[in-house]
Amino acid sequence: MKMKYILVLLTAILFSIQGLLADSPLTSTGISAAYKEVKIVQAAAKANGELTTELMAYLANKKNPLDVKIALINELSWNIDGKDNSTAFLAYLQKKKKYKNIDDFLNKASGDMIICMAYLKALDNYFEVDDAIRYAQKAKSKNGGSYTVNIICALIEAQKAMDSDWCKVYNLANNVRINESLKRDMKQEAIDIIFEYMDLYNDNCK
Picture 1 (cartoon, helix red, strand yellow):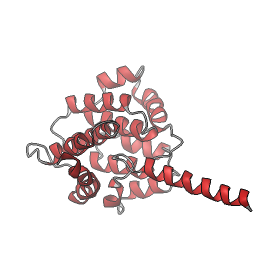
Picture 2 (cartoon, one colour; picture 1 turned 90 degrees about the horizontal axis):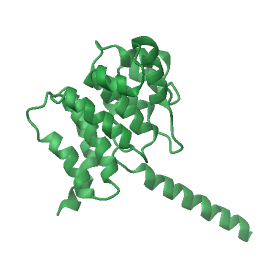
Picture 3 (cartoon, one colour; picture 1 turned 90 degrees about the vertical axis):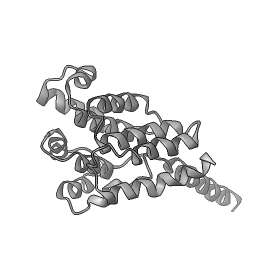
Picture 4 (cartoon, one colour; picture 1 turned 30 degrees about the horizontal axis):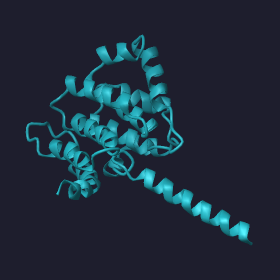
């Protein structure tokens, strides 16, 4: 009986810790909820969290809107044990676009494509986002006028800032929100979803 109690307690602690780890800028901003009516996002919902050929083809097509691509990636979500969607997407692009490696991709690809790779990389392992930040900043250098590029870059950077400065977590996102020069290429509903969570960090700036 005592052993059974201990096992129940340990299980409760495990789920509690997992819940805390899931509470972060990358894991608590359900952007895809604003795009549930879009067929490719619906397809992503049925993909068990893994990129399919259909989904990669959509991401690789420059004619498709960036915010829908981001919603697709968001719908694939995250896994506490890690994922490998960014590696699969790079392999797909190497075959289709003849990129030699990740650096060749970063140099030659568009900002929109790179931010998709950055977001995939960040959600693959949200405990280690240094490479994803590097990709996202590269995307911003190529398409710095896009609200979508800037806010995804901010969420990835905020994930890193969680370790040291929760006021910075808030300001990274808020600085994008108040930048009126950016092209609003994301649904307002999706923006509201992001800030419903990110505004929780505002109290840390007082």
